[in-house]
Length: 307
Length: 277
Image (cartoon, rainbow over all chains, first blue to last red; front, side, top):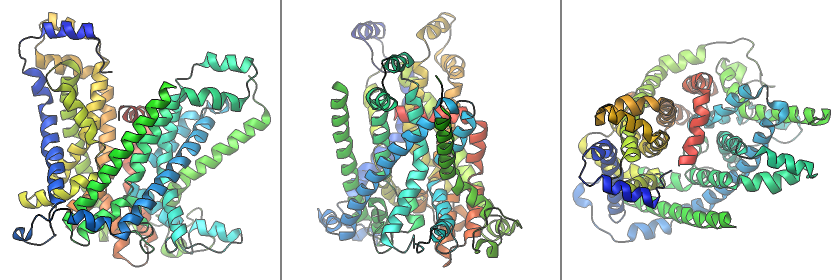
């Protein structure tokens, strides 16, 4: 999109030798917002992360305390535990996203479905548009202890009812279900867009050569849309690592600390335990984790493309 | 190509299963919102509300100010959308049309900011807003949301303007178009679909946001809808399923309307948003 050939560059430079104010005026409001409300807060956050900044304490009590905040939060077992769970959560959620999203997209894209397709698509989009808080309360009603429909179905099957909020494993499964439910429609949309880029004559040729449906899917379709798959993975992993709303609403981190995520621990450190400095240190560690993940992912996916 | 009967049945079966999974929770919340408490607590659960009541709505609107929170959310989301789209439409044009010093630096800086976790911003916002009187105000929240929605909006607009052929600008220049006219009368009308798409994405982002509002807003009258709904749970010991469902149903009205009237824009919006991000 932004690529300009060398030749164009040279001629453009020659055309515009005199200084022009116009471009700066157009981009100025956006840049002001970014500097004042993004760059400065990031830097300020970094400063706070090295200070003993407590909520409600007078400004005079704030002092530089080196790496104390970082050492403290990294030796907090809840924080370490939350990192493990957040990554497990992201891994499972995104894996299911890919399989379920691909299945739904394949079904919607099937010849049989072409007529009623549009109505179905608008219904499938709905979960994607809802606030995570709203999705979480909807599932809270479904997962209700005694009178919830999920437990009713389980009891009809003759199994003991499950405490979806009170027990560790069910609570984790429930939060995964909520996340998968609200994010898979996005993956479906990307897969559907990806299918549009597959040349039909290629599939026809393979079919004439006698390739089976699964061969066409795994050997032709999926390799062609691998960039879209990489896109889904990178966006969804970022999102899943930041999971916050649904946890606060559904379990608030419980039972015990078992469903605490990186986000909820940082939030609670800063505002429940009034330790803004510690929270900022946690937020920066989180930031570093995300940057590291992005770089590793970019490296891996660019290597894949070259093959 | 023939489709065998078995395959056809299999596909229909799968569609029904997927449909149930993705729509049943919404159906259940909407129907629960019309059930009286004793009808909610019954076995087997009522799939259809046989004696519908609006008691839950009376409860959330009259006793929990849900109407006010709905208006707060709309106000915040609409203000965010208008300002953010306006600024992004200007910036996108500047980045797409001109070459200038620092152009790529700023473009990629804006992109990089998208990867920063929200909590890195919200903690300093809390401290700074407390000092300048923006803490616990809707204005403060709107300013934050504008900043948060700008990166994606700017990148989307750069993409939309890039599709305009340069010939059109050249022709307008020959006709004696000034810089401002070029933007307002030539470029902007050509990206109207882009404006709709970006507006929808920004609106939904601001309307649905919870984490930042949780930190920056605490007085009752300034709450947004997600905050108020989450508050319903924490305030009471027994989860009030009827009122929760009613509040949730009120909250999904805009999303529901958008999915009916703007489906085309939504699909292209979410797809473009992903590809640009």
